[in-house]
Length: 91
Ligand SMILES: [Zn+2]
Image (cartoon, rainbow, N blue to C red; front, side, top):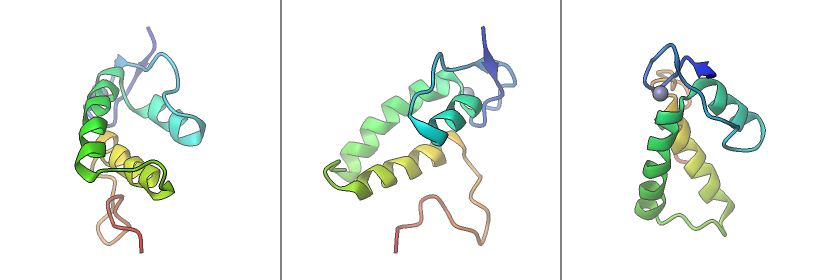
């Protein structure tokens, strides 16, 4: 079984995602740095985020908002103090 060192739960040999969950660079990063269990947790959280923020995917900004939440969830604590927070609203 392929394993990853998961950025969220910190397990050094956590089960990897069977395939890239999203297209492009972001999907590759998620697959390299998040484990299957944390990804499954995000899938549940994603539904809550979409409902809570009433994201409308006709609006391109909604996808960006969701992506920021996903990064914050899967790669916590990577927003540097004084740097750009993933959850900073777009100007
Ligand atoms: Zn994990």
